[in-house]
Image (tube, rainbow, N blue to C red; front, side, top):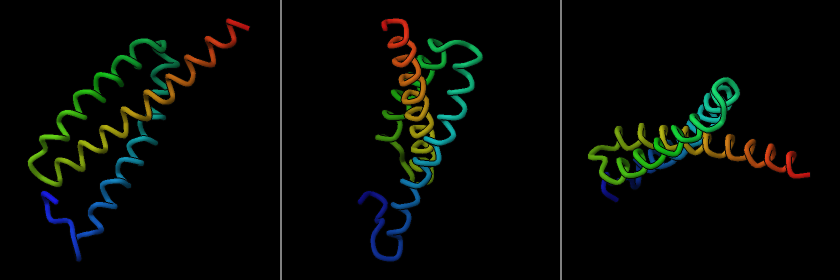
Amino acid sequence: MQWHLICKDKWLASLSQTLFQLGTLIGSLLFGMSSDRFGRRKPMLCAVILQIVTGVAAAYAPSYGLFTFIRLLIGMSVGGTMVIGFVIMMEYRQQDG
């Protein structure tokens, strides 16, 4: 509503969601590779901090372009936390059983 994404500009709302999903893909790849190289803890911490900072920043984004870029970064952090969290849980499960 803030940027009047109705009628002819309705596609911009879908673009924001598409870039979020693209960010999730990119974040899964980047954070997955970095967690293999540097261990799980540091990349997971970076992904969580990025998610907190960008989540707050998205709430105060003054323009649609900046909001969309921040959504891309949020998607990257979500992809990172999902991939690293899943791997941590599977490794923990292996040690347990």
